[in-house]
Image 1 (cartoon, rainbow, N blue to C red):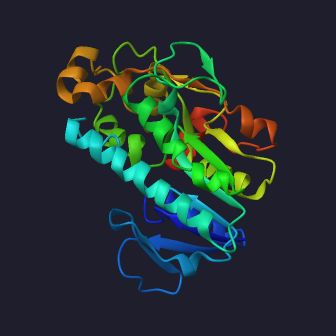
Image 2: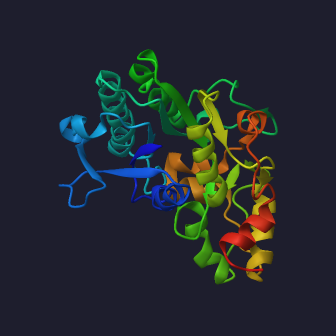
Image 3: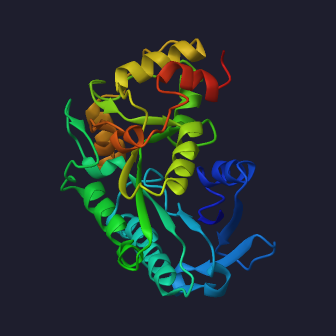
Length: 298
């Protein structure tokens, strides 16, 4: 396939592009600066600009761009930026693809399991309703912005990703330094469920939904066995051979992070029902082997 990727230099995109190329696909990277390489296509979501001609005849698109939700406190201005970085660019891309003379067969657009909100010990699947909180409403609007592509007959997959395990960044990247210093510990009660996925399975799931013609709509990109925050803490400490005795109480997190702390304290126990039903086989269904693999700690 000939696949265009937004967010190609981001955490997931930088792993996805070489992975798809190794699998034999041709990849075009959408960049927000002037293109300087043959595999680059220019777009500027803030101006509503995109190189339509370069997208004519592509087979698929993977849309990964969006500002990091955990990069700072959720002030009113930051919430607006988080929404603008997701909804507007997604709608621009979907409308552009819908208007092409030779449309792609598939659009895989990023979403997040934050859509489900705090569900305690309840198992949630792709058919579970969204939460009525900031992340829930944001994710619903983000997914709805792909509507023009779906209405034009393009197969749209909304990939609801959990915490992606990679030392290159994200949640695990931020945890590594304090844990290596022996300062790691549970967040809040530690009883909240964390839905995670190894980077190898994240890019594998993207390839799976790109190539499977029978997959459309929401797809949970998470490992089949989520863990509690306490289990994640204990396992990471064991993998790094470090104690995990410094907890972060809920009140301290709320004081330091404000509303964003609720995302860390929420319990979201997600099942990858659609991936399993369509035959995806996880390389790392269990947490400890996944952590040992990504951290190179055999």
